[in-house]
Image (cartoon, rainbow, N blue to C red; front, side):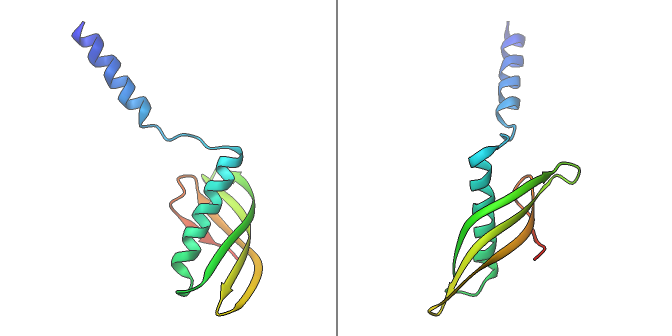
Length: 99
């Protein structure tokens, strides 16, 4: 009985540690949040970034998302909008800007 309880507990802990797969709106929001955090850390201090939308497709063989973001950048009473292209890994930890 103790062995069965230990096995069930072990399986429960193992299954609860698995990363959840995002899709739809949750995935879009996570990609936009990841890009905003990346731009906030790489742009000049005082720059305000707004990520408007994202178009993406997953590239399963490389375990990443290829993305195009429409962003608005404001700095010293000037603003502009543009497109930022980037690759973001499936774990959302690495951003590689391509444009």
